[in-house]
Image 1 (cartoon, rainbow, N blue to C red):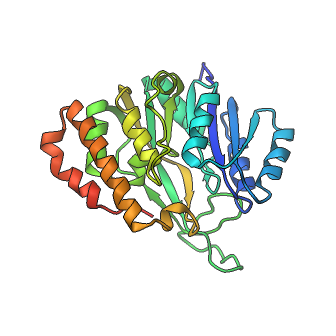
Image 2: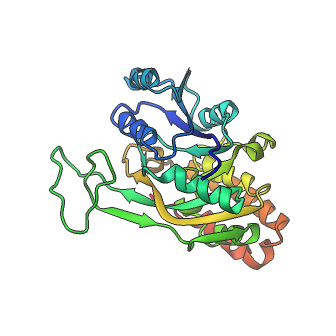
Length: 287
């Protein structure tokens, strides 16, 4: 690429001692070098902060922010305010990114003028028990020794999308990680920072990233779907999504459904798809 815009990679970290080194190293190994790597320690009580300090000492692209615990939404919002890059990329501390992830995302954003690039991802199930199983046919290694079978997820074919096409897809699969999460997407920083309502909701117990995406697409105009999987989502039984309180989860869905309804009325897509709003309300997100 002729232009090499800075990309701010935001990593919220809380008690991630078993994963953080693998995560950060996967970001440092990107084939796209022009990065601002924001490691935000959200009051970890383990050695995560010390690990991040070591990385910051050896890589000048890393900015370490140590803060009192306030939750993933507030931490991501702080990262977005601190971002200096033209684009935003998000990585969770227990996951990894493929070496070519940022390069492909930026290439499509630049080539097609996309305000958002959305990509396929891999779901990784780490081996259970202490011993790592032998690698067999049909299995792959997503990096850093996690030998296991990898499933690839994604719904759209490669190519540009209009706002209406993306919004329609989001309505088709409202409970999908593919549409709802932030970590398989690239965002335009100026668009986020120009609109105070494009944030992760600090009131929601989960789906704060889905709220962010619903807010973002109000202002984004062009989208691109990348069919190459760029992210390794590692199944973690200790994560919040695996330990949801059913009552709180229902309350969160109810709150989001009202926001969902307002957005699709604004886009002129609600009447033909209003039954799908109920699908979201009663649906079960991927785990």
